[in-house]
Amino acid sequence: MTLDCTVAITGMNAKPDNPGPGLAVARCLREAAEFKGRIIGFGYDALDPGLYLNAYCDAGYLLPYPSSGDELFIETLKKIQDEKKIDVLIPCLDAELPGMIRLQPLLDELGIKVFLPTQEQLRFRNKDRLTELAKHAGLECPETKSLTNSGFFHDCQDKGWPYPFMVKGLFYDAAAVYNPQHAVDVFRRIAADWGFPVLIQKLVKGEEYNLTAVGDGEGNMLGAVMMKKMAVTDKGKAWCGVSIDDKTLFTASANLIKAINWRGPLEVEVIRDRNGHYQLIEINPRFPAWTYLSAGVGRNLPVALLKLALGQEPPAFPETKSGVMFIRYAHEQIVSIHDFEEVIMNGGHDLTPHIQTNI
Image (cartoon, rainbow, N blue to C red; front, side):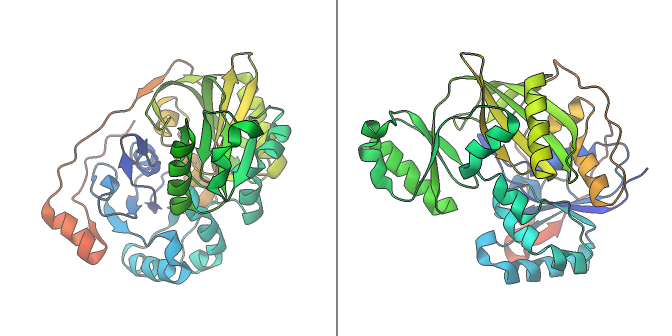
């Protein structure tokens, strides 16, 4: 069935060491043979590259930051909706989800469909509930602790927390810390960006495996794609990965989705430690930046999500393919100063027509 609709996708940022998922999701849709619609890229900064990449987007617009409040967000979206007639919105950033879920009735009134978890499901997979989630998955997990005060870092080694260990934001961001001053600096930066609590997590060494899939909201995991990280950035993000078929990771992820009836995309991150034990690191409530690998193995997950949002049956997924690699690279997009000024002054613009290259 042809998918002829207008889809808005957030997360159009693309820092080389920590890219957002939006461009990968847009690329999956653009290159799908059945997709014949339009793609609107949403960003939060005029320098987000996806606002200018006409290979993947037909238009690019700025949204107000989630911290700006619901009223401004809906006001901005109404203006865009009046002009672009968006059918489906795919949010790709953790911090957006509480507001998107809360505003779903208003999105329905605007004629914009979404396929999102409930607030309860979203809270259940919070990083501060990792121990409980690991039990549902049948996995181990590293010790995790919530903090609201940086004073912990000065004598943490006496409390059973030797350096190094991880400091994480509740929604996003993570860094390994190696001494008290480093830990305090990272703590303050993450708290300023993402609020409290800030999480600390004991460091686990081993091989990192990730899984992405879509939950149908009825306890079923659809189209699972797994990969092993082969190379990472300084922030630990995958620069190169290879598709795998790991039964332990598959079963654990299926158990998690069934336990909370997850609805929407997600990513499960585990580390297989040096003793062969699987440690659950975190669960992200959206597509990962490496989502394009799903198209590479023939399991185009953004297409599946789009069909579910439109009330259609998800596609039949072929057997998973192992040994398919992705290698990320930086790309320079030439942008006219006029287009940049359009985004700055008017909040968005149309892009020149793209040339469709279906796979």
